[in-house]
Amino acid sequence: MHALRSRRFIWMGLGPTLILYALFVFVPVIWSAYYGFFNWSGIGEAKFIGLDNYAEILRDPVFWRALKNNVIFVLASVFGQVPLALMLAVLLHKSNLLQRFLRSAVFLPMVLSTVVIGMIWQYIYHPQIGILNFLLDALGLENWKLEWLSDRNIAIYSLIPPLIWSYVGLYLIIFMSALQNIPGEIHDAAKIDGVSGARKLVTITLPMIKNTVQVAVILCISGSLKSFDLVYIMTKGGPAHASELLATYMYNSTFTTYRYGFGSAISTTIMVISLLLIGTSQWLTSRKKGRA
Image (cartoon, rainbow, N blue to C red; front, side, top):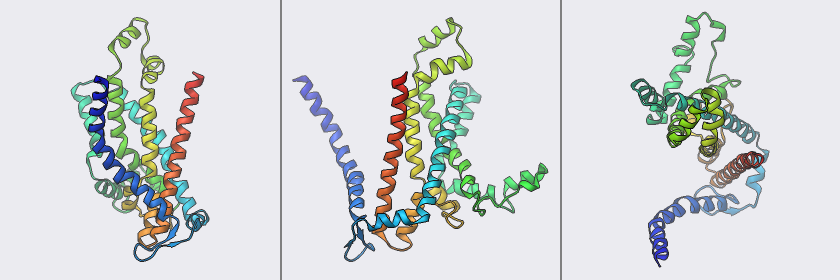
């Protein structure tokens, strides 16, 4: 009887949240997937065209460029944000004044608006008044000066530093919380056994927080595939679609040409790609656990 009451209490607490989540997440996803089969301008009658929108997406070279750029973003996030945040968490998990200051400095971009971050990096990359080219000049590296956001060969790679800088603070906090949850007895036992430094990190710390690292990787993948605002502010997907991402491709295809059915098909495609990448990362992680 007590278990039944506890279960009812849990459902009463979760019920309103689940209803709101379903209304604002699941219903729009299903609605969007539905309209992906129609030719619809947002007003008027929607004409059923089957899989034509998806066939057009697969034929569009801009889609494949956007997918390639998104894969670059995913790799940069997973192999940039996660290792950097983990390294900083290991170095800054103590609580002296300097480390608290450095933690606050690393977390500061999370407090700033993405618009502000985009404008800051636009000024950093500015070819005439940007601090990056100014530093290259001061160091005698004039040949390294580039049109960082206007050169189609490097525009997408120029967006990686602001991407990492923007979100590394989030993963720093996540990893610091995981490190602080490791029981002190384990550290004491390691000290008695003479395990310290890099050996302790590899054999004790990382295995203890591997589930947190896995969650961080999933957040990196899903967040990178949804990247939009930073890229739209800095390049709008240009020049010549060189920095186009799936989200900017969807936005430009939907709201500049008023093809809401086509945009819905793109959003559904993004969701499927996200599930495939996250599922692949989970599968690879589970294989490693099985071998261990």
